[in-house]
Length: 562
Image 1: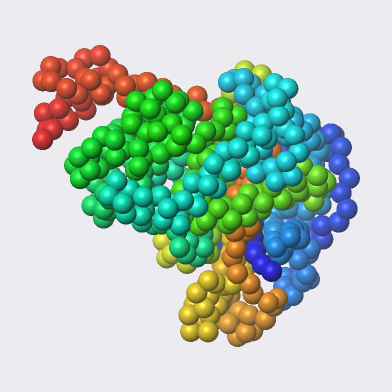
Image 2: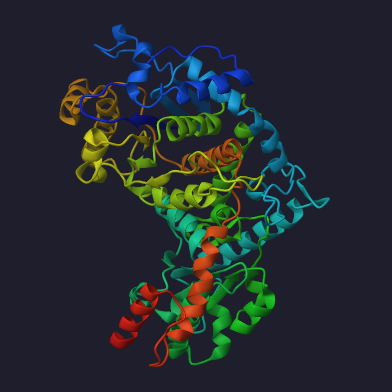
């Protein structure tokens, strides 16, 4: 069994601040509630924490020995996940008002789960939930059930993983594969990288996995310097097989490989593709039988559940990869069926809307107290900011409110010695999610390290709520012996319940803000300009086709190229 904890908190402005606590009872919500909330804001009543001081329960402040009245426990097949949001500036009345605004979520949610083309700008369904649909219930796109294709690719991945991990798959010199290099960028890199780091304890008997994403040649060169071409397998992850950074890195990796192999035919034994462009894959030298397909209804930032997760499956084994899918599927079912006022992704989304739209919070910190999850914040930077970083609504009008926040974070306790001072006493409100597994994978010195980590985790959330110093909170916790439920380990389902949970949170906020969370036109202009600039960097001729600033930068760089 597994126990894990997610604590959500809002750190407000100024020193010595307190948070608000009130019993969270049954909710009744109507459309008029949300209109009333907007009236409050227009009247200037929601500009600072003082507006909620009347909601406090002062009698509870001296000792804080109270049950978790603002919490939800998810009883999964593998153990419990606790979402504690008792340290937030929220009460029953406000939550009722926010829930009223979320009413449209139910209809939008059903459209997603039934394969409607909710990514309307690109005319696509959004069905990452199909990739982990362990019930195999039919999911239709254009009247065709996608599940047979999903299962076909999963079975192909399973067979391939067995061949590589067992040593049956041999390189050109007859040696087994010891290292796998995933070459991709964006969703083809961030998700698999986050997961393989989070699940390192389950990588026994699997190959080492490396990730190359940056077009800066340093990334590839430093990686290849540690590898043996005879025992290295490259995964080229690009849906179109035309992504500039990925294909450039792939071609350079092939050149490096052929310096040893000296045979173009050997490429097929050391390169596989995650793509849908069979002609391009074949032209590269990859056997198209070793091309793992995914579909246009799989967005890049939601693709780790697809063939893009091949590096994950190779690293931790396909059985563990299936557990990963099962954990996410459990969260999908919870999101689809739980009442809104008990629905964890919905509650997280509403807390975010509350702080962004009513307290003008600009950022959201994700603070995992687990070293294995050190890439979690980076992964959801893309997941959240590329999804909800929009200023045009679905109706084509410009928003007059804030949408997605800046997402950032680092693991605890490293962050405490870097930026927590600003969270505690800076001038900005910074909502934060603190995440921790209840037990470490490495109980060094009778779990002393983990006990200190847990003490810091609890101390920071309490200090942010009460205005006490971290040292005071930590000393109290250590003196109490950390009494509480039995501590248990981080397993596959924890990471992927969490990943799926935040995916659905992003969806809910997109519905409330009336934006399309599933396109990313904002990144296209930079790609177009890069293609124009690249040939201009060749030769000695002066470049005048851009603005004066860009022309000047190009000129300086051309003069100083090696």
